[in-house]
Length: 93
Image (cartoon, rainbow, N blue to C red; front, side, top):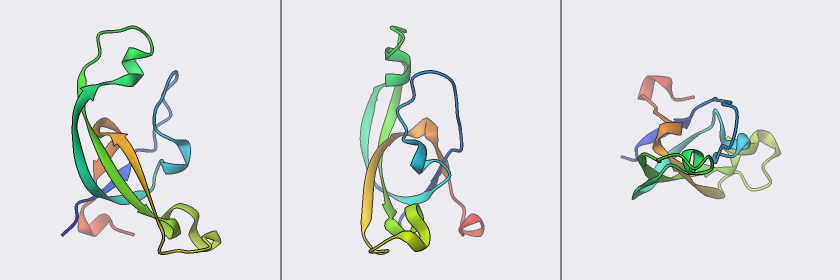
């Protein structure tokens, strides 16, 4: 079974690498890509923690609701793990 996650509804100030339209949306982990320096810290020339980068797959229906022209199409996005929350089966929409 695919691991479901929700992108945090978070709006920290400054340089952020997670698209706003994905925040609060749920998807499934397509694959784990490894650990990389956090670009949100690198943007400010800080020593960046290495954080897991995850490819998450979203359906068009999840992203655009009834306005999705092809609801079953998918969008993959690479998101750093600190932006993701595990989604328990009871939390699923």
